[in-house]
Length: 301
Ligand code: SF4
Image 1 (cartoon, protein in one colour):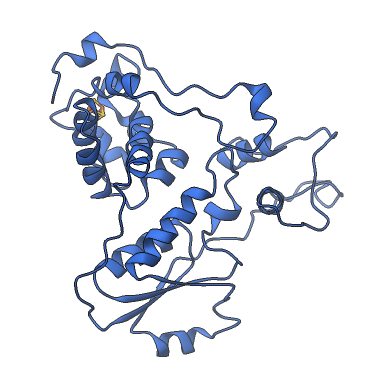
Image 2: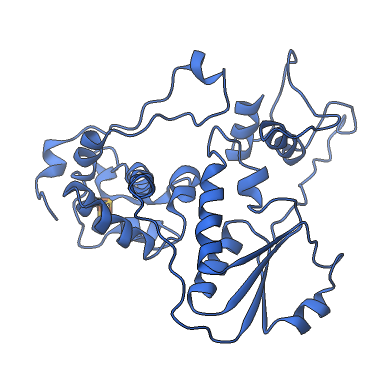
């Protein structure tokens, strides 16, 4: 813990600024501006390096939060990304998309606003990419074993990267035309621009992971064939079945599932031609559900 009194000196929580609305509506780029390093260090200094860091329990990945808060406070970006990557393959995804249960678990939150853990996380990885600190880690030797990963969302990509680095020969299968799963076609660019996915895929390809987009396992290749071709198969498919509502009027035109709307919008933003695209222009829109998906629909509409 670099500054034992940091949380007493900096009591306010300062997060990245949003780009002005009049600028944001002109494009689909991310909402938040780049984080200023000075403010970030100050915010990281608020971490108390708790004896029992409840942020660890809150984080599904078990991220070593107090360690990289401390390294960020000290200005050791290289050390911070090394500790962050120790538990998290893709902090640029989680730092933008995760609802941050670590912050709800932060002990400082008892009598002050919680540490801005998510912002520190995303700033560490952004700085690492800017400085070319994120390099491929190809395995030193191959095991001779082959693994198929079915599904190229964050779970599939993380599994593929770990297995490749362990020396296995890994192929990732994706039924869509591009790799990324929900990251590619579910999450709007204003939350996470797609270049974040592309540069990770480039890193993974350089490590030896192979990608096969546009292959629907169970249709183009049977599961039996896949199992016969590979020593192991990892299933990391998403759940694409929406939960319908049995309410009067559900069958009326103009009532859509979020994932139909968002996938089309993501394809359009990527420059693809989308036939019969669901467009909200000039319409009054009601969104049922106020979670992340609802917020994505709201921002897109
Ligand atoms: S719970 Fe909060 S204050 Fe404690 S170590 Fe984690 S981030 Fe730091």
